[in-house]
Image (cartoon, rainbow, N blue to C red; front, top):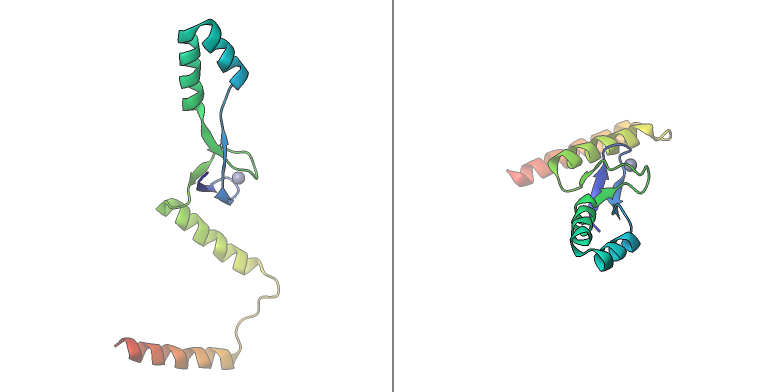
Length: 109
Ligand SMILES: [Zn+2]
């Protein structure tokens, strides 16, 4: 299991691994005909892909990729904007923020 990002719905987290075909068919092919069994196994192995547990789309990219990081940041910004109780900071808070900002700025010089 790996961390992935779904580009369809914005889901971030564990992804599900899906393999096409069935294990039963694979076993039968291996027992009856060795070569088709081998081909079938290779086909199944190559068909393995990650899917989104939310929307079942195979639009999963690694959560570590720069592309995914960009999408995650955009989604977080949207979530903050969507909170109805969100109020802009008061003047006192902005003032305190400026003081802290100046203080940190001096420390870093
Ligand atoms: Zn999804």
